Amino acid sequence: MMLIYLEAEQGTFLENLQIVRGPYLQVGTESSIIIRWATNAAVDSKVWYGTNPDGLDLTQEETTITCDHTVKLTGLTPDTKYYYAIGTTTGVQAGGTEDYFFVTAPSQNLAPEEVRPLRILVLGDAGRGNDIAASVRDGYLKFTQSRHTDLWLMLGDNAYDTGTYEEYQRGIFEMYPQFLRSSVLWTAIGNHDGGCANSLLQTGPYYELFTMPTRGEAGGVPSRTAAYYSFDYGNIHFICLDSYGSDRSFVPAQEGDRPSDNSLEEYRTPQGAMLTWLARDIAATDKDWKIAFWHHPPYTKGSHDSDTEIELIEIREHALPILEAAGVDLVLGGHSHSYERSYLINGHYGTSDTFTEQMKKDGGSGREDESTPYQKPLAASHAGTVYIVAGTSAFADQVSPHPAMYTSLSIPGSLVLDVHGKRLDVKFIDNQGEVQDYFTMKKTIA
Image 1: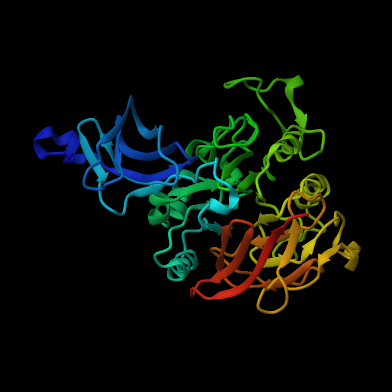
Image 2: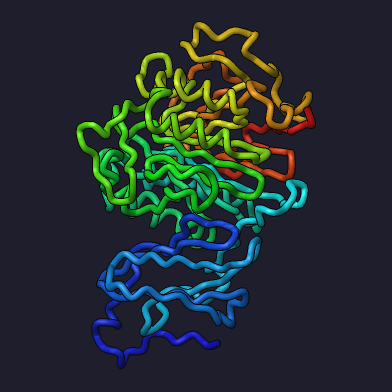
């Protein structure tokens, strides 16, 4: 099928029609994906797609006239590369080349050892739109080269200083166009994003720009809120929490509900809506790997201090016991503009001066070439977790050692997770594309 591009004779309106944001990929599963973009004028939406860039023989249209376009493609084949183009029912505006593609998630019916190697990029506090962010981006591209990024996570503070549309445009959409159009982005909200967003009401640029799987459509238990959610990818279960939000949180009985005085529940407490959902969600998964991410880290001595700040204290005291009891493997945060990586630890919920050697399940480096990788039995409770602060994707500040940390660095960079079967390799990549920290975790039969 030949793509039909917008012609000049279709009028001045269409001549001046421009894509001002995106395209970007959201909520990717083994059989579906959402493609979003924005135009400078309100029109309808159309996506052409297929497995051959020269023959996009499938289409999906949305007739709503809008500047903000959201098109969901369904009935896709698992673990398959699709090419796409976007535009209006009048013609294509962008895409139709080998640079515009996505890869669906592996089938959930595969045994873990049958799932191909997966690569995940993690950026923390990246939303400054500055030269450092660009260098971290380019450093990752130098490192990964032709290896495809299956998905990427942003750990909050995705737009500085207050989370406006203009700041998102500069910090994300103009900074990462290559990532956005070919790898599904999953985001957590940070305090800077929250300057113009309300987690309680689900309003503001953060909630309007990004689509979350609130109904469990990507795996996991439905959260019924975009503030926190979960999803599956291959043999990994991801959990995203809202460590900022507000002191109280609201979960609607059905879509569209708004809070009333008696529908508010205490936030960041075991009895509150988010952590009640967390306990249900993580207990329900049977995936080999459990990875949680949010903005405020439970342990840090960087530009923020986990001993003194309320969000960090409450998330450590209330969320970590739930996660560790369920065998979570990796917890990722930002907020501090440092890179800090813990030992394999368990059971530390107090201030840094209460950390003891007994809380280290493995006090080594986890580096296979130096000693031994971290090892955990499958589905084991309280077998140890590695905690990482990765908040240097646009700025690096000074850091002091926290006793739970194996290493602490003040270097701009990104985090790379490589998962293959029952092996997890984690690398911190600096803005020159060099590996500055690394470790391996393996799952064993109990």
